[in-house]
Image (cartoon, helix red, strand yellow):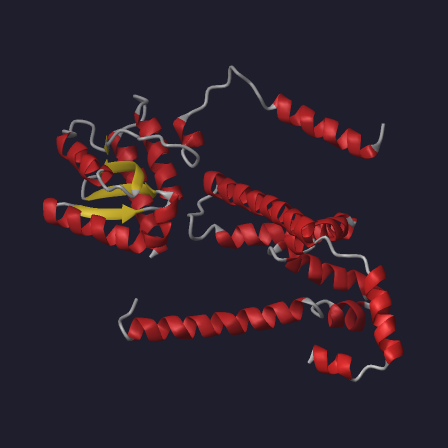
Length: 159
Length: 155
């Protein structure tokens, strides 16, 4: 695809592309990966600490502790987004802050803040799940597919 | 002083203030982080611990486990264990094997098996409480039944 596109280019376009490639700032992929790894890891450590807190001080077992932990993490990231801290963290860590469940809270609140000038119903209500809606949709769909596969494997006696 | 420096200083002070050498650390406080090997517990204080010690040794002989706690109540016997990190993918298989071994060796006992950290923590807490003379066998049996009920809720 790329080679056929290059063939159709005029000499001027090709020259421009070469010039653009010369001045293009290279992305520090490795550095970004390391940053994402550490920040994502720290977020997970905080999540683990919160789940241990619930296990220690409340009657949550290892299996049921996931729900309050996720809720707390999402709530904390929502607060941090409101205070403008999570945006800075997102700029620094990229995927490291977007991939954990905290990224979901950030996606919901940042969209709500962005559209609040358009009113509460059509602005905040209508646009709150603009980003997070796709996460919910594909999350529910993939959960359905996985559950279907598991049910079939259980019926066939594999699991 | 810049705001970030102030925050770092505050965080350091908070961390240092939490280090108190004289504070006594109980096993239950660290049970989720390290091996505690609690002694076998019998809720009825006059009952022999011989069989329960054998059960603990048999379960500990599994190479996938690193911490085992056994509690014997009036009707049930609770076996709780921690699985080594890399073997946690085979949790169901390990549970099945332990169950099979226990049923074969001790057919008269009614076993409840769990690998849940919360159940382990509560077992260690029960062990600590039982060391106090004020904690009666009746109270221990009641707490034991609550822990067993908690394991049933998981399934």
